[in-house]
Image 1 (cartoon, rainbow, N blue to C red):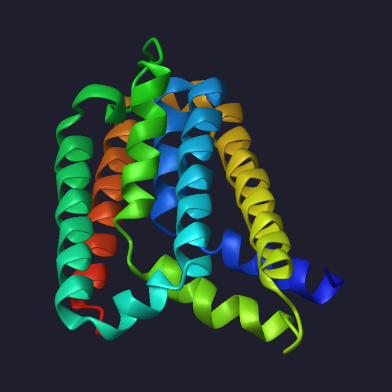
Image 2: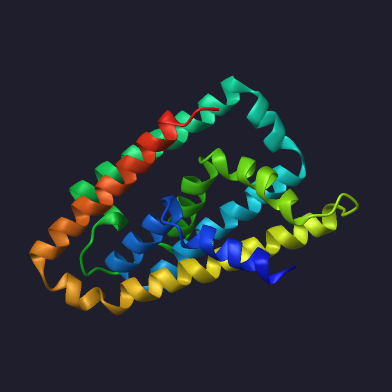
Length: 200
């Protein structure tokens, strides 16, 4: 894998998206350990999407307008639910000092959020071939995808660490917490709307 590939992947992973917003909200609300588990969930979903792309199902998803719309609106609906939960401070999305929730639930939510994003498998289908030769086999695609997953996890853990490091300062200011809760809710809602409006 070339340095150009890793630099490109780094830029892609740093761009704020569904996984980044979720990881930041969990790390702020529950601390670094919970943020790391959120990163695990988002990364696992990336590996699932890689498997889908390698099986050629991403091409089917891209060619089936009905399937694309179904997955897209399911994802948008889930993001809207996350936005509502964040705004109302419900469960693990409540930004306050609290004991971390069940690890399985944190991971499951991260997996669900990213699995319901139909753009990820299509991204793999469009992105990975740019760094492959015509003679490369599936093992090269797997290696590239594995590198992408590792970078995803590293970047998300970095985001979680940054959020957790300033957690106490943020949590001690109710006004800041209120605005952060609204900002995260708005971010989830905006991501949901963008996903719903995405054309196949």
